[in-house]
Image 1 (cartoon, rainbow, N blue to C red):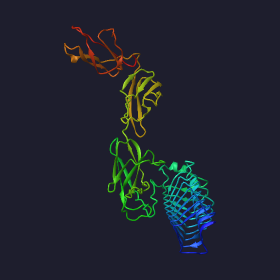
Image 2: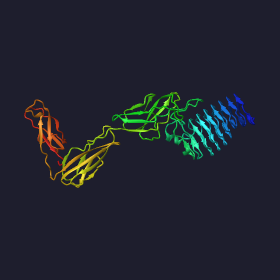
Image 3: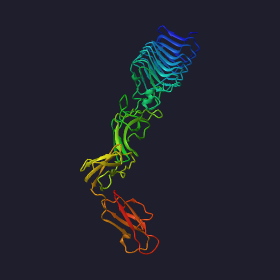
Image 4: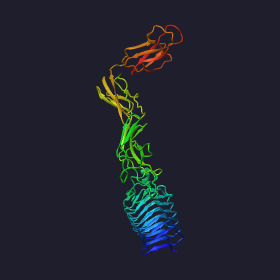
Amino acid sequence: MLTGIYVADSTSNCEIAENRCYANGNHGIYLDVAYNNNVTGNSTFGNTSAGIRLNANDNTVSKNVSYANTDGIQLAMANGNQVYDNTCYGNTSGFYINTGSMNNTIRNNRSVANTSAGIVLDNGSNINMITSNMFDSNASWAVWVLNNSAGEIINKNNIGGSTVWSDSTFINQTNNAIDCLRNWWGTTDSEIIHAKLHGTGTDSIQFVPFRLGAVDTTAGADTIAPAAPASVWAAAVSTTACSLSWSASVTNEEVGGSLTDLAGYRIYRALTPNPGNWGSPIGSAVAGVTGYADSPVHGLRYYRVTAYDNHSPWENESWYSDSTVSVLVNAAPRADAGNDTFMRPTSFPLMATASGDSDGDPLSYAWTQLAGTDSAGLMNFTTPTAIAISGIRPGTYVFQVTVSDSWSSAADSITVTVVDSATPAIFDTSVIIAGDTAWTTNAPVTLALAGDTQAYQMRIGNDSAFTGSSWETYAATKSWNLGDTNGLRAVYVQFRNWWG
């Protein structure tokens, strides 16, 4: 038998229900120039061509199961049909919309595990609405558009990947724009989604905004999300925290109208204003709360907010707020050029090693000369330790170091007095032992040391040969041991400057 059930010649208002049509040489059920019929609850399998074929207008095809056919459900020169709540699996193509079929609605269907495509839109099939379907685990493509099909609206579907090629999900072999908004692609990473799109018309597939979670494809399910907040604000409240606030959502996304099912908000954070993926939310707030504290956080950060409804487990979450706000949470670095000092008219170091950043950020350095008798040549001027190497005559010079992290900077200066002397002496030195007391019963004492502004290093000993002593950085105080024997004790101290 070529066709299991054949309805033709302008037949109308028939119900074809609860039949099993299988192993036919052509189609399981075929409506040929038939109108306003209802095909429902049938099982078609193992047919050579289509499980259900419509060459007819304004019919309803619902709640059928079609498997192991060439096409699960096929529309050819068919217009204005309603095709919903059907299951197609194990066919070559789950749905095949062909030969100028127009203005059909394909909704709330499941097309999975077919050996080619979940749905094919071919040969000038135009202006069809494909919505709230599941296309998943098909061998080649979830959706295949070709041969001048145009004006298709493919919205709010769960579009899964190929079982053969992980990045093959949707192919557009036309140059026509395709409205593919608000589908769930199994990810919120726009770069991954774009990589799933193929064909000469890849860039004509309009897929943003997309869903941030799966669609409830049950017939009659609510798929409208609350609208995202119209405005978002952010401000730093410390060097490790910021506060966010936003306007309350009061309408629905897409359709407007009064919002009645708001459950709450989700907060997203990124390092750049337009990342390919905003990732998982960093936090949430229930309906009625329009603020969030983010801590700990550091650096320049960008935030967007979404709204979601109470239809668990199939929550409808809005697209990200149009308002993207940025806030800098950062402690400025600390610049320290060192103490003013005296130098000889030759090369000398400039040291900013005491600079730092409480956040631990990587730092950059820039040394410049602000004033001076001559223009000094600087070597290593982008490091903490620059060297003035040329053009130095006696006089006063001022150098500045600017220390920067990725977002802010600080500066400090040092005055260097260059003196024309072979070895300038260190004046105004003194050593005070144990607070200048005349005697003590304690061998451990504190030394108070003064080596004026030129002192750079010091060494201390209990004998004039400084036995066992070594040079160390000059400090104003030093813990010292006078030795184990009683009697008059002497402490010897030497200071030296940059000239030795």
